[in-house]
Length: 80
Picture 1 (tube, rainbow, N blue to C red):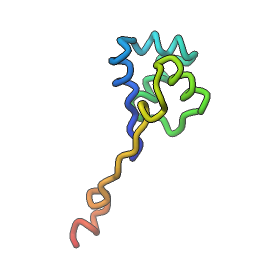
Picture 2: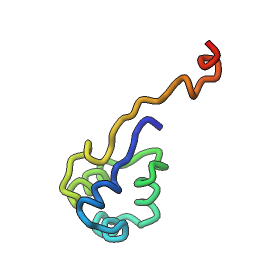
Picture 3: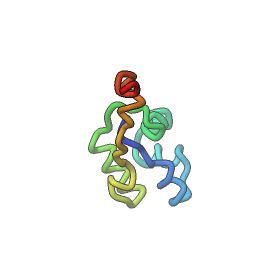
């Protein structure tokens, strides 16, 4: 997935636990863990806004794009 999630970085900067953040934004710790670990397929803007409000940050502090290595993903291009 080319979108990397840096919630753990902001949690460390704010010295906040996953449980505390989940309580403050109104989602379960399990759902926050899915998002934090990059396993979520989508995130609601309301959830992203709540994360930004509680962590006092911008969406770009939580999400970033990383280019995928297409050669590693495509065996045909690795042979070329």
